[in-house]
Length: 353
Image (tube, rainbow, N blue to C red; front, side, top):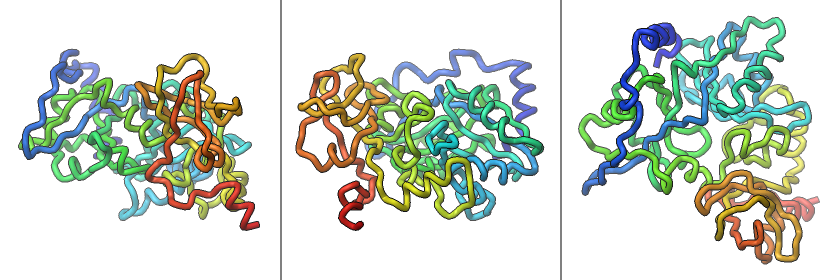
């Protein structure tokens, strides 16, 4: 995808005219899957926004700010996108991002929470100092979408078939189960995306529903995203599972918050992590997870239907036999399948020492 070359063209097209508004939304009735055909969900991520960072010093600029190794994106055989976190000086998470490379080696696109877009850009500009770096939103030109199956993953559904040169397609760099990201022109319709990917109707694509959407998919995996679920300054990157989600490099040079992140990693003492949680009743105003005895074990930061994501104490929740409650009702914490078998715990580290 040649994003940098298409920006001016897309802006001109936006001025000249857009598709009719009703074409910008998926049909109300989803086609039923037919025998022998795969089924997937195509959803626009309306709560995510793309920020363009451009300049001759863009790589060293980002390298000094983000937890992951941005230089990997420079290699022809390297990934087309990486997951990373921006931290404060105390090593706590400020913003989560997916960084995408473009055909222009001096231009990268950073996906962020739409509600935090202004603060995120302000934070980036604060650190550019005298570097020749341009930072601006491309929200009026490109939008992120996601394609996933009901059980998650299977990026092969899209990579071999799409024929729209204006798209950028990349598997989610965190987990295969989170599907495939698609960066598409803002004025492209849901129907055109479907037709562009599957000309021969080899896949049945359906719009997101209340019972099948990207948010629920993330909650079932225990992956937090955005400032509501990863509140700025409230958790450390390893508590947000950045080490398990390919979001932190322990071999790169210094970046803001790096010292404490490395210290926590090498000590192995990580008392809390984000986990999926299953609710038995609608969540009220109290999001604190407690034991029956009343001990606070964590907090739910995002929830929908009977699923949620919570920052919980590993030792007490996973290794204990106690029941968990939230807002007075029973709840169940689940160990994510994608976690390594031997998740470091306080007890294990203490025994080693």
